[in-house]
Image (tube, rainbow, N blue to C red; front, side, top):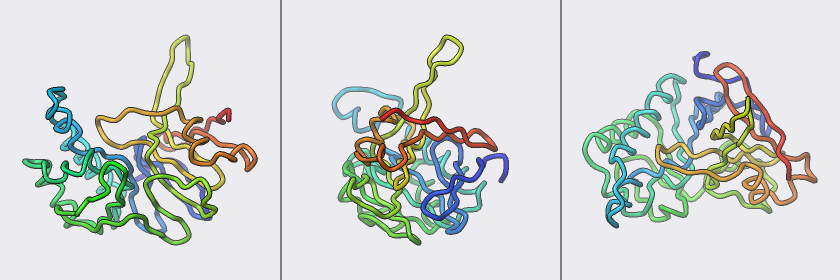
Length: 229
């Protein structure tokens, strides 16, 4: 597993590893956490005549399956906006549907509902919840600014822009404050928000509580960049 895991990211009294560039593995819970899959986004836009490659769901689920297997997770938790809209769950078909059905049978699977899919019914397996307390950490889709408990969420799709060697590099990242981790979007067809803006929206007083940082997993290490708030 060392080839896919970063160094330890400590948060809320627990240790996590960044898997790839958009997932967290929680060894203490044998749980893989992802956010904002936005499955069936391409088919959603196709309904209005905006044609995108129709392979996003299968590509996203294939990557998720590979990560869950490599880190030997027992529990997979998806932190909201799992489908791009409430009808996306029913539109899923073909190989993507077969793969999802297999995954929800192999793992203890939890769907946290999001603003895009509040009525998710878990028709492909797993269980649907609005939020979930695991250990001492609250898992939900959108951060609650006034929440004082350790919290992991998604929703804002944070990205970090860095100037390197006379070029600009933009990468998905985790926004981390003393109280919150905001996960990047895992889905194949997802945009992003500036990581500092995401931190300010999730925890407006983060600057008074030690600031915020953008965290990236780079193979076997973590890279952290302080954010200007």
